[in-house]
Structure formats: C-alpha cells, structure tokens
Image 1 (spheres, rainbow, N blue to C red):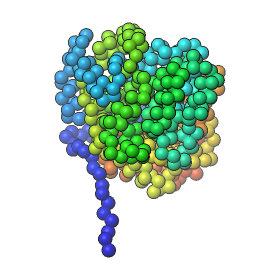
Image 2 (image 1 turned 120 degrees about the horizontal axis):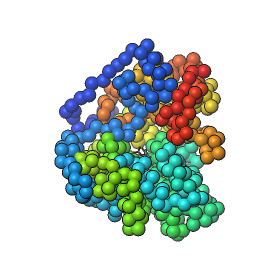
Image 3 (image 1 turned 135 degrees about the vertical axis):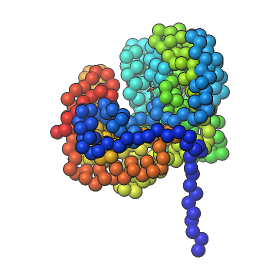
Image 4 (image 1 turned 180 degrees about the vertical axis):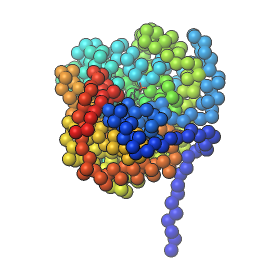
Length: 460
Ligand SMILES: *Cc1c(COP(=O)(O)O)cnc(C)c1O
C-alpha cells in the first residue's frame, strides 16, 4: 500500500540574526495585565513573549531591505529613494501619481479632506477604524455595503470581502451619486478576518461606479494577500502570478491609500496613490501641511528605499505562499482543539470568535477584551480585541454593537516559527478548557477617539 506523504512548504529564507525573547512568570503577567487595565495595547512589550498584537510595522526586513536603508538619500527635497519608490508603485500597482505619507492614516486624512464634503456618504466593504474616523472627521458618513456573509463567522463563502452590488445600488439611489464621492474598497478586509474580494466582484464594482461617475478608492494595505486568495480560489487565476493579479486588482480602481507597514514589509511608511492629475495636485499640496514635503511625506529617505524593496518582495509567489501558509497552519491547529475561529482562515491572522468561546459573557461585558487578557495571562501571548471596544461609538454617543466579537491573533511577517505557532494554539486551547470559569470586564476609562488603543478595564 502506498502511503500519502505530506508535501510541506517551508519559509523561502533562512535566519541571519535573532532577537532574544523574554518569558516572565504567571505572577508577573498577572501584575502586568492588571497595570495595563486589562488592555493588551497598554502592556509593555518587554513583558510579552509572543507578540500577535498586530502585523503592522512588525515584519522582519530582508538583508536587501537593510542594505537599502544604508542607501538612504536624506536630502530634504528630491531624494533618489522617492523616485525609486515612485517607479516601483507605478510598475507593481499601476497607479500614476504617488504622495508618500508617514503611514496609512496620513494618506486617509489627506484623501478624506480632499474628496469628502459635509453630508457625503462613503459606502465601503466593512469599516476600518482609522479609515472611517477620517471619513467622519471630514464630514462624511460611512455606509457598510459588504455582503451579509462577512458578518457570519461560520459562513465558508470564499470571498467574504465582496461588495453586495444590490446594497450599493440602493445606496446610490437613496442618496444620489452626487453625495457619494467614492466607494471605499478594501482588499483582504481586516475587520471581517482578512477576507478577500474577488476579481469578478471588482469588475462589477467598476462597471457600476463608472455608470454613475463615482470613484473607487482602494485600501490596498493587504492587496498581495488578497491576490494570493484569488490565485487559490478564483476560476482562471491558478496560473497567474501574485504580481499580475495585484496589478489587475489595482486596475479596477482610481487610487489607493496604503499602510506599507503590513504587506510591504517595512516598520514605518505609507502612501496615497492616485490616477487623477487634479486630485494628485491637491494631495501634493496638502501633504506639506500634515506630513512633510511631497518627496518624503514624513519618512526618511532610507524608509522609502526599504519600502520600494519590500513592495517587490511582497508580490513574490513563494513569499506569499509561506506567509499565508503559516497563518493557515495556526488556524487548523486551533480548530483541531475545538477553538471556534472565523472561517475561512484569512490572510494575516486568526480571528477567534469570542461570542462562541465565551457564550456566557454578554457583549456589554466585552468578551473579546476579556479573552485577549486571559490568553496573555496563560502564556504571555499578546493578541487584541476586534469587537465592541474597537467599534467605538456613533456620532450620537451610542455604542456600535458589531455582529463580530473577535480576538485577533495577527501574525507578523517572517518573524515567528512553526514552533511558536504550536505554543500559541496550545495556550488558546488551555484557556478554552477553563472557559466556564472566566468572567467579563467593565470599562473604567474611555478615550474619545479610537478608544480600543487606550481604554482601561477592571474585572467584574
Ligand atoms: C493598518 C491599516 C490602516 C491604517 O494604516 P496605519 O499605517 O496604521 O496608519 C488602514 N486600513 C487598514 C485595512 C489597515 O489594516
């Protein structure tokens, strides 16, 4: 009888330098989480063993990127690294004009201020915290037009990032195209669990928005991860490269905001990219107020060089295969222990369903916040809440109560090993075993903006 031999993938790199980790005791962790107000954002990172707070700015750069850092041209104006970055953005993404910013939200601020008037509506495939806040601060209102499947953590639909075209059409009818400056379309929808949008859906979106003269602005923070899922799941794309798919995705849109701290493998950086000359001129003017001159936008020359190199590495098929492969490995391990997670497994992390994990804790007692604190207590693994705390309050002061109440285990790129993934899954399984004994939290301090970053809690 022939045995089935598993065909494993491995990381397409080897390790040249290591960063030592610290492990503190359970007693010390108890003290640390108490002092942090049960908010993992307020922990000191030296008390964390494995840090899955975010995949933002936490990637390991390659030897080539580090070499690029040494090639920084720190001229105030006209840095060589800016022109390299511009060339890479044009070649890989296809957008015509580039305005660098210190990170994604810098681009969101400028774009929202240029395109949104008071009373405007911005439809999008699920909100993102900073994106929506900048839309609101500019006088607009976000309208969720993602498909219903995205709000159901157990639904296996392969493209849960898709836009519901009927919803969008109704939205355009209701408010008229004049009040909709653009559709805010994200690839690899973060708040839905890193779920992709399909090319078929993007084509429909392009056709509908073209008919009404509405722009499509692309939150391209994780476009390469989205392209990987298109390659794996969408008919006709199995033999296309990630690079080709990324370019095709961008071609259905008019511009983009980018947090290069994710896909693009750098620790800091972002940009606004746009095809329209007039919008570009305005953005290039505005960046001087908020970020810096238009050829550095709040970045050092070396940061732009590392970004240019990182963008090329991010669209490499082997890189993306290993990147998402590691996330899937962790997700499958968690499922084997019975831990409820969002399905299908997304691109940048595992999203544990706190509603099913802790069904006895009502949403106003912050089940996901509670679970993140418990996992830190168990093993020093730091995760974060993506539920009622992250959702914040409406303009009228009421809480948003999102359907999804999740704990995000975000995997930094090229940083941890498969053995780390085992430790994470085992710790989560241990907390799952004692779930009935876990109580919720109450909020004792709430900041006005993006409260999840700085809110404090106490055990009930
Ligand atoms: C991180 C992120 C942003 C904001 O980018 P920053 O670089 O953190 O300012 C915007 N959109 C999405 C989807 C993100 O994940």
